[in-house]
Image 1 (cartoon, helix red, strand yellow):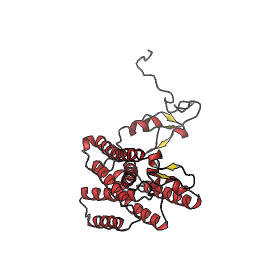
Image 2 (image 1 turned 120 degrees about the vertical axis):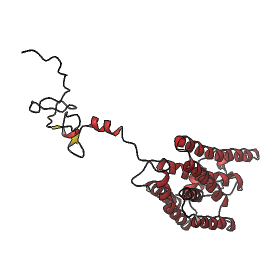
Image 3 (image 1 turned 135 degrees about the horizontal axis):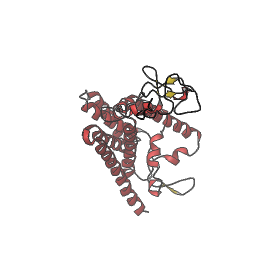
Image 4 (image 1 turned 180 degrees about the vertical axis):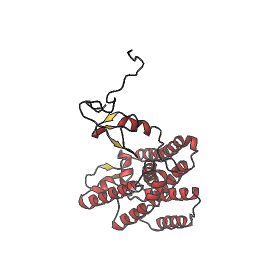
Length: 299
């Protein structure tokens, strides 16, 4: 009898079906009587991953997933099983902020958008021009009353999920926040320096602008959206206490970002989408820098 020198060495956990002891190839100290359907190595219960038939080991599952392409939305975002979750989180954050406005003294004045003013309580200078740049974003989560809150959150609830489903979560978040900053920046740039501004209207108008762009791209009827935009923009110009600048700024920012997201060529989609979003953000920053220099020069 001659020795078979051509037989390959078997990996741990494999061997004749009746060989004992049978141990898991990943955990040699554990008994294993089930084999992976793909590599046929023995696996313990902790390593057993259900497959269409039988079980597979973690390594084979990872190897198989390498060839599976991640599902994407029509505009390149990741597909989510719950496409409205970000919209709901934004609504929840805004509602919590409104509760804090009612419960905490001075909360609203600490975080609303204001250019440059003197705090009547401390007689100190406050505002974006005084370095409180965070107000440009925090003001988008504050509201002047329950009706103001309900109208904006209803619009976010109606238009947020479909846009989120079309763009994906990450792109939707970028759209919402940069639209909010765009509205705050235009308000800061052209309103009186001591005029406070607050509300999610800038971000909501950004969503309306994006909804219009997405609908046009998908060849849907946009007449209802155009009428809604016209009514709300007109209302902003006619009612003195409404900050139309924030509406216009949010609409422009949201519309421009949506154009970059929706019409980016497929072969350079991510690059064009990021560049377009950054360009809009840079425009808002430029407005803030210009207005800040002007206000500080007047001190």
